[in-house]
Length: 140
Image (tube, rainbow, N blue to C red; front, side):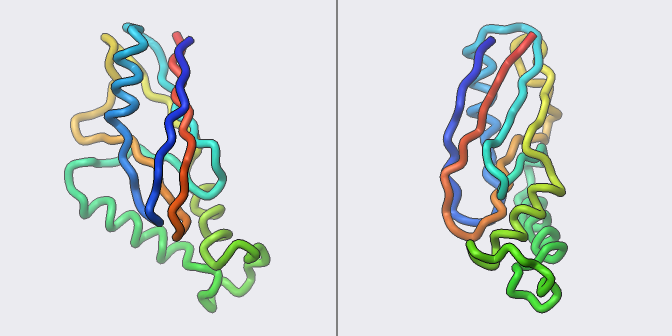
């Protein structure tokens, strides 16, 4: 079964599309049908499939999650105990718990079965730049 780890560099909170890298992996694997599993090896970022046509969608998602789970320095978050790595750390873990760290995408005719406007994104929840490892695994 083909497997590859890709490294994504982030510049802070936001969505980072890597659909093209995943599509190239599937294409190069030479499998006509199967399941692509995408897995991120971290606890303060996540994966989502989301619209990739209008950047307002990404901006609104980032704003929504920032309002839903503000930094631990926000007075509404004074209950947070895990603050050793900064005010964005525990909120990042919460956001990752609310989303997902693994996605399954069907493959048919050697292509991911994504919809017209769907893209695969790493959703970075930390403020600082990070290098994130994403595992791509194609199985029958």
